[in-house]
Length: 504
Image (tube, rainbow, N blue to C red; front, side, top):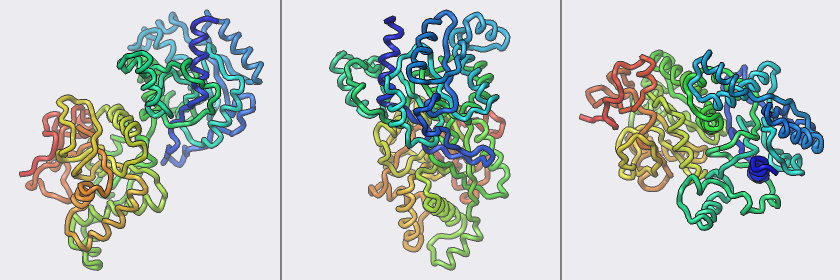
């Protein structure tokens, strides 16, 4: 057996031991394009439960195509063969369309782009895309049925991968074994799986949510994600100089997830604040976000509530308090497992999703589901915050987080917060973020933070506040590459601003 064939044999054995699943909590707010179950559940059929199977082959490696045809005949699989774009063809594309990637990269990208175009043209809602130069388990159909029988919604499923994933079951044990075996601490060597050291063939396949998928020789994609990739590929090819597997890894984790890995994004906004709604819609377009707007409580409504219920705060501070409470009630009523909450005066780093991916990787690795709140942005320094000098984002466990313009909350935490905060309205006359900060300090909730923040408040000089006056200090914070400034929606370059709010 050739070395290349042997390599893929090892990888494919592994792929059906630990399948990648991404996007189980995908939430779509577009009623014209709702999420659908794209696996029909019949993994014994000729397309392994998907609507179509595409197999990519190279013209100069017809033996691999013949090998896969033999596999297909043995396992009763029906596939559509796609000839890979050649390097000479990619050279022409590079010249005509001004692509920036290398010609081998363009050849690979263009091949997958043609498959997505076919899916769009033929209205294919699910497809399994394979390299012809692979080997598979003889009980492939049974393994797929075991792993994917309960999977309904997804963006991409990596059924083959070439490196270990921090979220993969027993990944830490594997890294320890490899460190002892190789006597090395090099991360690239530690992460590379030595498949022959493990008895994968005797293990049942398992599905888990990936934090960094790697390898594109065997993956499934749904129609909605294929349509999005199809629309974006022409622009990406003029800007991105990366291998397709790296691009798809970013896409799989957060790049195509319109809710940043949470079940829903909720945005507090008053209908008459048109400038703020314009900014949020612009952020959503640039970063491909699905935003669900929720009306905030206004000052007059809050004052009525204060009088009727004996609350110890009133006015705009109470309006903010009650607006966040209303979202917690909604999260509970709709059984939203995780929600990301934005206030409507935020700006975001241009590389929002890359930064967010780093944070979510660390959350998954260190905390899994054992967290209550995650602050993507905060407005004051925290005693536990990393004191890094560079721009790289880091995760930390917050001691006293302040400001609620960008944070995620779990369903169970929302239930606890609702009880706590409703009681505090009548006993403590403090703003909601102060009460939450105290609760964090005393260990009532587990709160994580990102440093430096990558979602910040625009500030009162540019957007008047409903809560505080400019004389009380500006809320504007630094961004390294502001999205709104880049779009021309801000007059102040956030690179010139302080990291946290300045109080007179």
